[in-house]
View 1 (cartoon, helix red, strand yellow):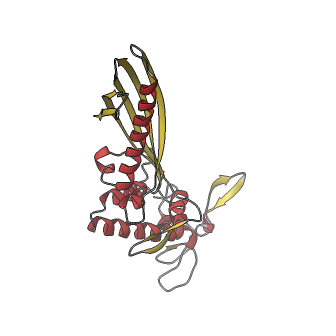
View 2 (view 1 turned 45 degrees about the vertical axis):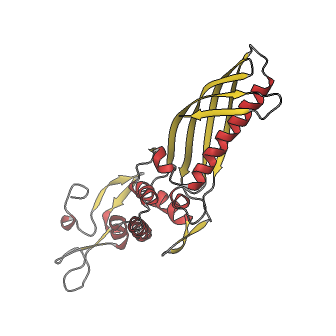
View 3 (view 1 turned 60 degrees about the vertical axis):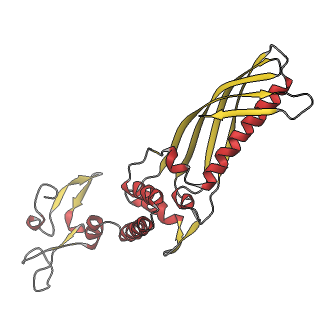
Length: 258
């Protein structure tokens, strides 16, 4: 049922209401062809105008891009690249919002682990610098954060699953010195995040599919059902340990992250 009546009941010159004060003529949307091929309001079967056919069938370019993306998803799954495949499927589904990612997924990738260790090392170096300046009996605190850019190579699945991303680590620590021993306690809250979107004018080489333009993804957002979304993972470390200051020997550091 269209406009409250069946298509075959509409005559070539019929109209329906008004639009902006002008008569809304259905003949501009529908065109009828009889089985013999003659056109007009009478006769047998009918067909939609090219405009209405295009409207009902959808944008052919959208379907072409979607079909290609679906082929890429199938190919990725065959190679065990489910993280990249899941993210592209989520984009096509058009749910948007935030997609939560588990830490166990991220630690499979070397570039992520390097960024994580980089932030840990930064905190440990800071803690050591603060510990060296503490006097016996003193207690102090350290509150700071570090950002690491995660930039995987083209041979990593993470490159196709998210591209470049960011890890933010926020730490709060307490340091107390007794004699030559500094006791450390605290926590670090981590957030890995990346907007799953597309950069106009850019492209990436996808094995088996050649150079794929980011403009295709943006086209699906504008004319299809696909939607950008945020990839995000959050977790917390409890940090504890000791630093022993040795005036005539190497200092000792023992810091645990759990």
